[in-house]
Amino acid sequence: MSAGGNAILDVQVWRGREKGEFQAFAVPRRTHQTVLDVVTAIQREQDSTLSYRFACRVGMCGSCAMVVNGRPRWTCRTRVAEVIKDGEPLRLEPLRNFPVVKDLAVEMTQFFDKWKDARGFFEPGTMPEKDFAVVPPASPERRAADAGIECIGCGVCYSACDVVAWDEDYLGPAALNRAWTLVNDVRDRGQAVRLKAVSGSAGCQACHTHMNCTQFCPKAIAPTYSIAGLKRAMLRWTLRGRP
Amino acid sequence: MSAILFTAQRLTAFVLAAAIAIHLATIIYAVHSGLTAGNILARTHGNIGFLLFYAVFVVAVAIHAPIGLRNVLREWTPWRGRSLDVALALLALLLLILGGRAVFAVFSA
Image (cartoon, rainbow over all chains, first blue to last red; front, side):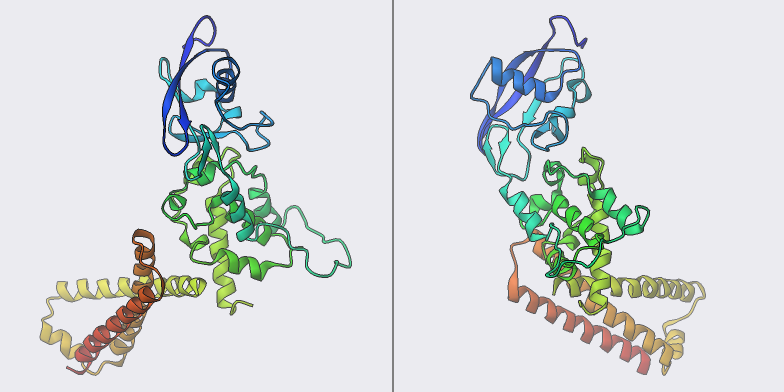
């Protein structure tokens, strides 16, 4: 389809919650149009009751993820031309593995609660350090943390994860990836508690290495490798008698 | 507990990878060399090396298999909790008894 002229895009949008149906909209096709542009056009010009979530529109905030033609994506940085061929409909659904609030907006409380459960926050210890920590940028720990640190919390990996789909207690790729960045933070003083938190039955060892998270992460992070790192760290920690 | 089971399963996997390779190679060698059951039993009888190798093999299996089965059951069925753990501990014991009995029988035959 040429992106200019009077071309019209056939858009199928999920309406409702867990139960609902697809509603068809016709949206003018524009050059370089993103999927988020399409949703916004529908909401502003055709049906103001359509619910969805976005904030920054530039791939920083992680708010606008949806399932687009069967695959989880960040919609603000996904151009329509990337996901459909000429004449195909654009099919938009809420993220999988999340409770649906309404239409394309999902409830993310459980997702972020799992970050807390995985001790995905910096633990400074009880006493202030005497001096600044020196962290050489080329050190293996810093490189490992760098590889996973750019997560924007969009939930795409969580939506794509098969293990989350069959075990709702599983901490999920994003929370475990965050835990891995902190395992590699030499300043952190909560490592034993964190390793215990990520090694429960819903922790890192539940990962089946399907790599869906790595396939779909819009920030090109590889949570699968982070989780593999956690498994190795947990193994060493257990062999040392779980100090 | 979960970390200990994970670690035990990974460590026994290392043992089994080597043990199974040796076991299969030995079977293929014995078959291709035309050894009879009598020949094989004559070689295993009183052989401490054979006894130790297969004793380690049986212990590794008795640890490895129930942990894996526990994971499968927890993922694919609603079975959880103490009854599952007890059932799989009994399976481990069964594997240990049956395997140990077989190894000792071949050793002492």
